[in-house]
Image 1 (cartoon, rainbow, N blue to C red):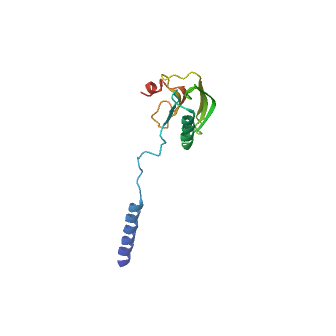
Image 2 (image 1 turned 135 degrees about the horizontal axis):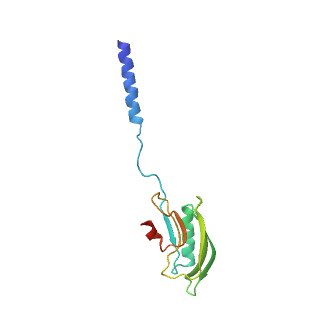
Image 3 (image 1 turned 180 degrees about the vertical axis):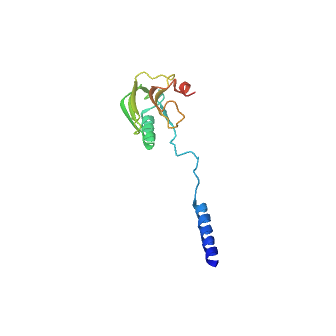
Length: 131
């Protein structure tokens, strides 16, 4: 009788210890990277472009400039670039007459809710497509 009580106590202890260690499935958000949206505007200067290149590289994205054109004030007026997100998404775009009205660049969206995960070139219609 004492042996069965001791065994029952040990089994109960093992079961409750297991419950304390058990962590139920979590529905918390997984570590999804933030979206990356880069817009090249005519207000950018060469150092701004270098900073953008560095910032996206820290997020695992390779950005290379094939051609850059600047006006007499050193502001960007044309760009030809290649972008590789290093996850299968890559592309290029070229605009040699940037205006302040265009949203020209690239985006990489990581959310499963996005309709468009990657785009290069004109981003003007992108927000409308996501609605």
